[in-house]
Image 1 (cartoon, rainbow, N blue to C red):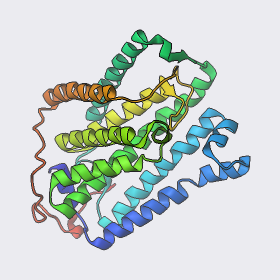
Image 2 (cartoon, rainbow, N blue to C red):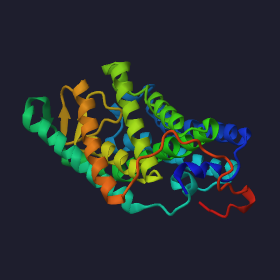
Image 3 (spheres, rainbow, N blue to C red):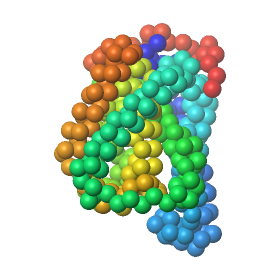
Image 4 (cartoon, rainbow, N blue to C red):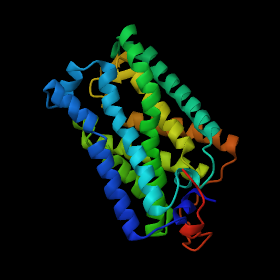
Length: 312
């Protein structure tokens, strides 16, 4: 079954979508942020910057990232209750999670980032400041290794899974679902501090491009495992090795980039990097180009909710 056809399993009423989105957002934004709010009250601070200044790095990161784990659980439960669909149907059309696809994409993207950043470090060493603190790094490492994959799984499961599938049901066209899910992915990151520091237009262009690329790989692979692997590699690499002043999650990374102002060069560099990865992964998995013009057929392989045996 194609990834997008998983949307036709289970219940697809308007009420199911409204209930899922409302209760999921409540679970994520309210319950998911309770630990963070409790910490701010306990420390007597009113901003995240102040909280970061008075909390150990590992505690602050745990508070920031744990909300995504809670949001992921809330989304899975809401989809199960209101749509009668399990995790796998949304993730890849009903198959077991393909860990090999995730790990391959993670390794290739991580290696590509290491090459790109290593080149920048060699060519522009004056733009990087070595700031390695062994004690701080060891404290944050377990938190990042556990919660960053959950944070990226949350985003991929929602944007490239549930949202893109839902938009196919609503629009009947894959290309519209692909584009709208990417736009919403960019909009969801509009509150990041990088946007205020570097400008709305250039940062939204980058987020939109990431959304389009991750969506493209999800369509080609008929599931979220490859996009999840790339997303995780991107975030983990930046949090562990190269941070900058306006990062949404400040960490004791090995280097601090002094001037991280984005430019068109970064856009072309990203397109080239992803193009190389596409060639490699397309040969490994023998992908076909996704058909963005294909119109989804609501009746094709549709299964009534009472016959859906899949479990989470």
